[in-house]
Length: 202
Image (cartoon, rainbow, N blue to C red; front, side):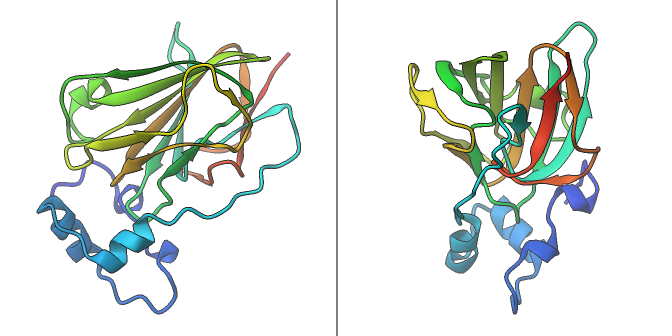
């Protein structure tokens, strides 16, 4: 298997349940063949309850995984969360507001190492909030072709509320308006609805 990222971006054995005998390399090979064991699928589909912090001034992580910070010139600040095969794959609303739109875009699926990856099939949820309009992008991969969206345009949403799910892995991008102070570091592990990701700077 060709790996575009270090192993830490693909899976983390520390996330496996105690006493697990799964060999992640074999799990990955099975996924690439379109096969996955029922017991691992049940683990993958876990959806634990989360209690968001009470601070209303912070943006929360939209997904579990390793975060990558980017500040593209002339574009919205981006917080990219790389979901590993062992991460919880339910995405959450990072800040309270009203769903403005939900758009499916892209026309193909790509491996994360492909330069076209960022233009592949994805769902973009745009939310109006007191801090401005922000977007959550759920991206698929070559072997991850299903995105579930659990919100509707017009919905009033709370921070930490379930937004949707990607199966079986991929990337979530949070695009924020204005100037933001990151509260995390590159490659830090974050948890959806729990980890404070950023705070708006005056």
